[in-house]
Length: 282
Image (cartoon, rainbow, N blue to C red):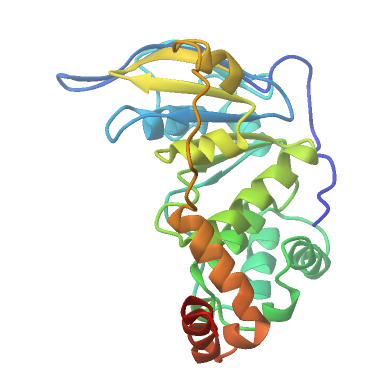
């Protein structure tokens, strides 16, 4: 998949957040949040449930007004220049916003028309190709696997090449293979110049993807840095000999990979038999 550079850029950081505060009646969700996101980078916002991650994303995407503080996205003030911010961004929520009745291609054409873009059909075909969905483009989206639906959802978000994209827990509920598919799509977004802010509860996801990581806790950013910088917060590692056993993820991906394309089309029994044969030494 090759993603062209994002358009409509201005100078300075892609996202600048200063002193954001937000309360729901007596509940203070954000208590002065500060961070910046460099252009063309992947920024991961970590935090437990209720930490305020989605609230931050809603404010940055103009869906919610802060009680105090300021934020700029692609150089535009989220409070005073909401229309310009919305033209600069795309938001992929926690659940895929895909119409299961329509085909993958029809979903993309619909979004292109809503954005008043020229030649929606050509745009849809290009996105299907870039996200390796061409073969499934005419199928109803309801027949897609979880990973395919999520890739289609991200492709829909990229219609019009917005320079900034928000991914709110993009791999929640996906199986290991689907997560890796989405990870690859996110990496290639950044390689194409798109700025990605993702929220996640999966620490390995942030470790795999992010250029910088911030941890939001009790409404404040308590640490913010690269993975190498965050590792320096702990005592230096000691060198010890440890016999490393394969993780369950290693086993799963190896077994599924060994099964081959035929197994994905319905020959799963052969993969099970291979595993039994290997384990018995035959």
